[in-house]
Length: 433
Ligand SMILES: [Zn+2]
Image: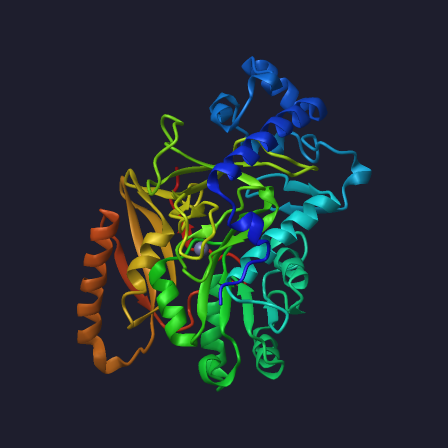
């Protein structure tokens, strides 16, 4: 049976949804202009006045916001409310310098939980479920984000956090956990670790649903996870600047429902900044329609993705964000070619002889970049040398056809690649520039 958290919103007529978005955008633009010196200055520089924005058709007139703006105004120069109205902070670690600080009013936290409650309901979760939250708690938004969604739908929440994998497995089994939220790489690790403990997640636990995100993952990894663990694996999207994890797929597993009454999504051609049609991959740009503490106008999230705005099989009318193609900042350039770690994963999961854990090592070979992919064999027996040579050749051939570039495959022993409890580290760059 199909269930909805807020059917009147989730299945509303797309025309009414657009109208609602237009009204919210008009209000938002005035709100940030009046309250945020940052946006007032930026709008003035662009020669834009709030009254120039009459509907979402005018969105292209508005300037973009980028992550650097949040860094430049550190810690809270872009906030639109007084510090006393902020009820929570989160912060994401920057690779360089200061972290990015995000603030929330009580209404912001309620909307965040509401977004997840809709998504969790759409995959059949409810008050009879026991949800293990194995994202990190703390400044990272993953743990607390799904925690509040889980509480909102009345499920029982197990705030396991990250780490202590053996205890996670023991509690999952003994407390009859039915759903887990974590990164897909951590769940892959959990399946292996459970096997080592002599506990099959598939046969000896009640786990039936996984909500996996915080890093891009492929359709083939989904199949592999589902086969090995017997669960249904769902993708979730969000990023700390927009709140945290926000949008989950429905049971159709055909894209994540992004709630149009809260957010306005655009997919733009990275060169021309013009919108691209449904199904075409471009840069994701998001406007928060109802956030109070830190609303963002046309925020360049840094992800490459596509949208599907047709009505979903589940009856929901809000746009769907299709599986991410990678983050533009995860991309590495090797010999002038753009390489995403997700492309390597896409190849590896087709080979049952290797594990999905890998490391891309970039180095210099004279003037040229060299790329090595360290891959774990599932079973390393010395009498199979011949097979390894053949497997190496097949893997290298397949990688070349996806990447358009030769990558050397190096086999390492099972368990050698560091397992991550958060976002997996996939690239070691030893090149000197
Ligand atoms: Zn759907």
